[in-house]
Image 1: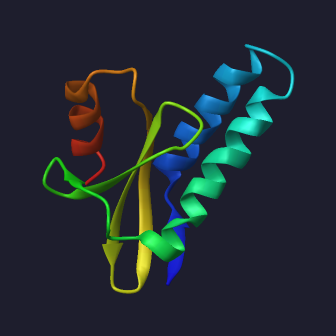
Image 2: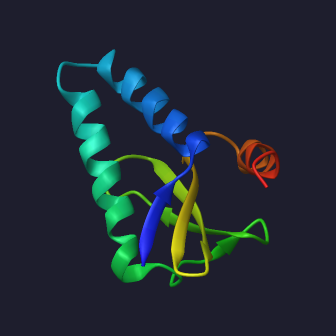
Length: 100
């Protein structure tokens, strides 16, 4: 299996990093390290997560209130979005609908 982080998810990660950088020194980098670790765990656990919005598996981050939305296509894990769970589910649905 191979993991591919799409442009939309890379932007979500950059936005999250920027938010946490404003909170305290080093937190932005810790955020990225934690989320990349969660994403890498998909090499072992892809496909075991609950499907949301009819199309996406959702992995919840272990350290931050973020959800990683991904799909499996052939032998590739496509990460579509990394969204803040403090936002409403309707916002998540709307954002994900634009990606497919």
